[in-house]
Image (tube, rainbow, N blue to C red; front, side, top):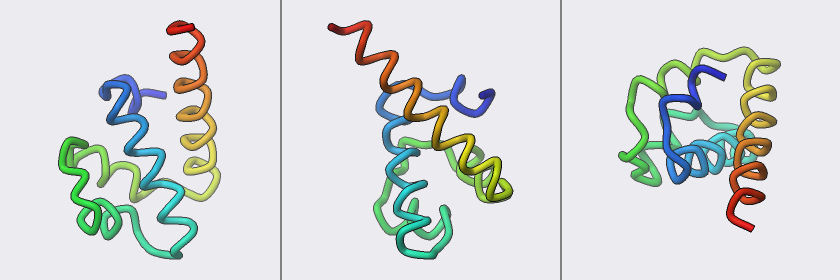
Length: 76
């Protein structure tokens, strides 16, 4: 996914955290980004993700999990 190609590992992890918090709290990605002060993730990325459909958001969450899992396997 093009969005994730612009981020390092910790930013991908942060975006995933924010994405799941957004769904859990029934809020917006922008709100969670500001609330948790994840300012290492560029605002352009947050804004782009904010306009994702539910299906795109789910695909993003799956891609985040896959990337983090693959990166973990490279470490081991």
